[in-house]
Each structure stands twice: as structure tokens, then as C-alpha cells.
Length: 263
Image (tube, rainbow, N blue to C red; front, side):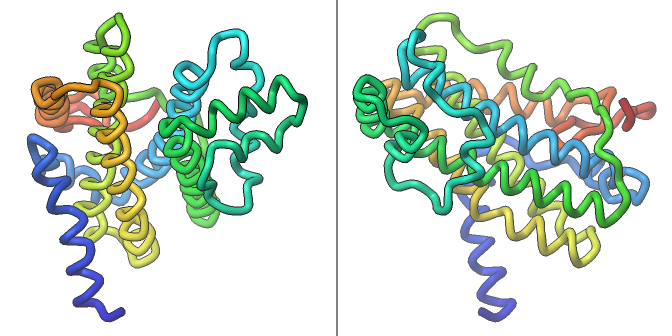
């Protein structure tokens, strides 16, 4: 595939994301992100974001795919790394145990579209996490403690407290986080060195699919039009992205004059 066809493919991927998001990444954030001294913070926070995405998806599976008394049957995150290929059915989890009672649990899981999409997402996010760690190691960037930005917390504050509204809101938020990640990978790539630029471009396809999966699931769980709720979270997300932010992170807003990049 030549460069022109690659660029055309990624422009096609980004078009619906640009339409979905209520604002583009501000130039002030890009100007800050392209500074060489900001790279360690970007890489550490990127690694954190990949792990948090996997953990959030795993939490959705635990909370919404099984009754409380059966959640202990789900494997931990390490299990997903051991799968040889992306599962077509949730019943891959049945490899973990084969008792008759548990077999019925996994048969039920296999019917759940949330599980199928989330298992695939978990695998990909864990793989991306390990890729970022490898890049950090090659550049002698330590995986140090880094405080989280206000971004996800700012949107989760608006999640409704009753079901199915709560899961619908969480899935919509997941869609915005994945879409923003994809948009920032694309915006950052031209300003990075060749290795990082290639890596960020390589992430676009999966991140674009993740946001679509979250939106599809949100609509399925709602069973009704959720356009107003999607628009509401779009406004909240844009406000966080466009307003001054005291911390510089991968999903932070406009860097203030004293924006911190460390812990």
C-alpha cells in the first residue's frame, strides 16, 4: 500500500470521529505536546490510559455480564493476554474452568455482545500497553507514578445512578475517550519522530473501532434514541478539552501558564 492510499484510509477513519467530537484538540495543547521535554509524561500517561481502558472494559464485563455471586468466575486481566487470537465468542472464557455449573455461566456469557466486544478491546489495550512500555524502555523513560488528569473523572461525574441509564452513560463516555485518543494520535503523529509517528498511526484503526463498538452497545442497552445523551457528553468532553488545565496529560485541556507535567 502506497503512502497516498494509507493517508486516504486514515482520513476516512478520522472523518466520522471528527464529526462525533464537538471540538478539535486545541493548538495550545499540540504546541505543548510536541516539546521534547513533554515526551516522558506523554508516554507514561499513554501507558496508563491503555491499562485503564482495559480495566474499565473488564469492570463492565464483571458488572453487567454476570450476577454478583458469579463474578468471581471471571479471569483476571492476565488471562486475556494468553489468548492466541481475538475470540469470536465469549465462551473462550470457558477455558478457565469446565465444571457443569460454570459451563452454564460461560454459555450465558457467550450470548452477550458486551462481553464479545469488551474481550477484544481488553486484548488490544493490553497489547498497546506493552508496546508503549517497550518504547519507553528503549528510550530510558521510567514507568513512574503519575497522577491522573481530570478528564475521565470530569465525565464520570455525570453518570446517572439507575439502570440501564448508568451503563448507557458509561458506554457513551467510553466512546468519547476512545474517539479523543484516536484524534490525538492523528494530530500528534506529524510532530513526532519516525518511530512514534508510525506507532501512533498504527493505533488509529483499533481506536476508531473501539469508539464505534461503545456507541453500538450504548444504543443496544438503551433500546431507545440516545442522541440527546450523546450530545450532552459531547458538550462535557469538549468543555474539558477546551478549558485551562492545571496538569499536562494525554487527555488534558488547554495547558495553563503553570501546567504541571510531573506527579
